[in-house]
Image (cartoon, rainbow, N blue to C red; front, top):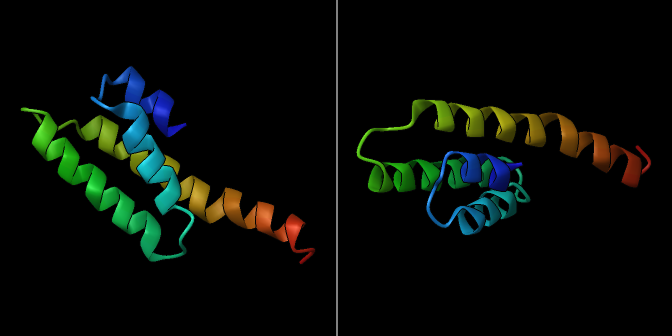
Length: 80
């Protein structure tokens, strides 16, 4: 999801940044926060005008993934 979203907004090196965001989501609590902070810093460096819509969409997708999708998958895998 992140790679498609970043590709649509023509973010440079979108697949590498998407991999960083996805891998940071594997660590509970602070992983998504760290990935999002790195992403926002890269946005500040890359764009002359800050892309609020892109940052908002990444934040929303990241929250959906880490708060709803991952617990649902872990519940099935761990038989909780």
